[in-house]
Length: 305
Image (cartoon, rainbow, N blue to C red; front, side, top):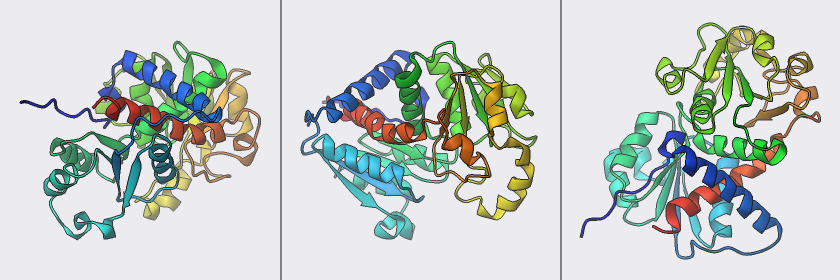
C-alpha cells in the first residue's frame, strides 16, 4: 500500500492561506485551553527529534514544552550527540532518524541542508531556523498581532534591519496573510530578490527607516549580526547605525502601532531600551506564543498522521 508523503514545514509557503489562518486560530485556542488548565493530549506516544546545529533558548524550550503539553516527548540532539556532527551524510541520518521518531525539527545554517534532510525523511520535518527562513517565529508574530489588534489583513508592517531570515519570512507572511510590508535596509543588506518575487506587489524597499515606518501598524526588527556573522559585527554596526528602532521611528507609525523583536535583543543597537521595554512592545507575548503556535503546528502535522 502506498503511503502519502509527509507534510513538511520548511517555509510558511508550505501552508495555504486558509491553512495558515486556521493554524493561528488553533494556536490561540490551544493557548486559552492551556491557561484554563484543560489538558489536551493528542500526541501520546509520539516523539519529536530536535536537531540543533545552532544554539537556541526559545526554540528548544518551546518545542520541548509543547510536546510535553501535548502528551508526547522530545529528544534534544546537538551536533556532538549525532553522527551528523561526525560527517554522516545527511540523507543517511534522515532515513535512520525518521524510522525512529514521528517528526523532526532541524535548526541549522544552510537552508539546503534542511531541504535535503526533508527529501529523505519519512516523517514531517520542521524548520526551527535556517539562514534563509524562520517560519515558526512568524507564526508566533502573527498570532501576537491578532491577539492584540485583530486581523492583520490590509495592515502595514514595517521591518527594519538586515534582509535576513526574519525578513524573508515576513515576505512570505505578507503573501499568506495579505498585508503591506515595508522593508528598510541599508544598501547591500536587502532581502534576496528571489524571495521578494514571492509577492513583490505587497513589499516595498526603503533605505530610510523613518519613511518606511510612516503609518505602520507594526514595527519589527532583528539583530544586526546573526549567528555565524560574529566576525562582521563591527562592520554591521557601522552600516546599520541609522537603523536603530527608537522612539522617533515609532512616532512615525500609527498611534496604536506595536513593536516586535524575535529576541535575543541588543538594547542600544537594533532597538532602544525605551522602545523594547515600553508600552508598545509585545515581545514577551510574542516569545510565549512560540510555544502555542508550535503546538498548533505539531497538532496539524501529527495529530491525524
